[in-house]
Length: 288
Image 1 (cartoon, rainbow, N blue to C red):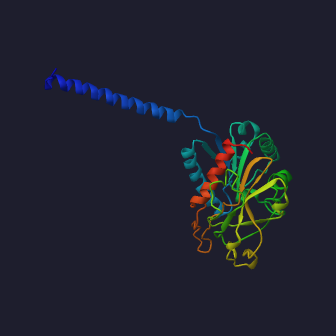
Image 2: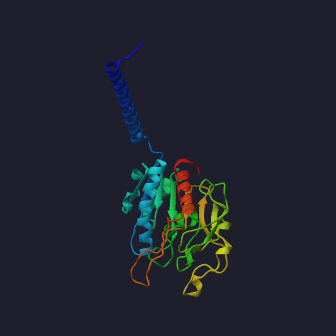
Image 3: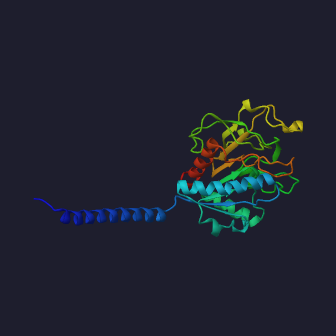
């Protein structure tokens, strides 16, 4: 059986049309599926973004970093400076709460956040979110948060200038640290020392601390701003809650030159970012 060119070309043309239509239809279905795919969890980040330029710089960076991570890992991310939304009704729609820089000051907001955590909610806090010092603009006037939840008590001191540190992973079993090397270099940061020794708190599991190879840590100019020895936890969790605190979150700023230019970036660090993302995925989908 033979075909002439006149009869074969229309047949081929129809086959090509059918194939093209099939690919277009398949592509549309895939796009619709991607657009309607249910997110794994929802994240709401609270922040203040005032006063310290180093914290403001970090917050702006965080609000660029987390939406990208949300798109790559199928969760949603929203951020707000409206702390009045820290209430039971609003929080009920989110699986993870982030404190990017500060903490709530209103008693009702504090009470609702405590209930949220006690009822199985999840939390990740950065750097200044754990700060408390009496007397200051952030007095230690929230015992549940600073004494029980974080376990750290008040702020005691810090390094200066913001410098990088070698960090040691103390527990590879936690989902936040399972993919990290034994040690890694962190982004430049202002490192905090705390009132309480977290090693003595049975509820606290220290995940990462400053490795001794980091010393001396800090450049001064004041002598007490340079650490030469000691034990300093920088990432930990409380066994009674789905929570993770990370001391990172303070960019280096050109204060001396009076340009306020950002000299370092918290999220410009692949290994450290792995910690943040794995920790967030654990909080959003795992158990305490």
